[in-house]
Length: 124
Image (spheres, helix red, strand yellow):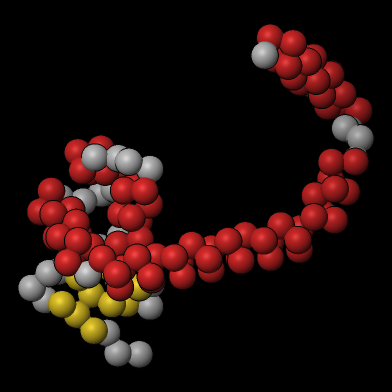
């Protein structure tokens, strides 16, 4: 696999997609934070980036908006398909686990948990 890079911008293309050089942070990770309205100073709290790296990412996103947005939508679609696959694959298994009664030594804990859930629901 060949890696294409934009050395000036510090953005490289890896098997994970458009990535900040020297990190495992993709532009799609940054886009996730931008989508929920986080300002740059909060993005720096969430992602292990230096201010200069975030500036490079934001500049690249702005300069290549259409390309990055199209790839980001593909990433979101793929993630949703993967999530749906695993939910379907595990549906029966999780239903069996949920239907399994608690073990005798866990019965008191189970009853305490159910009582707490009932109290929480009543307070809501």
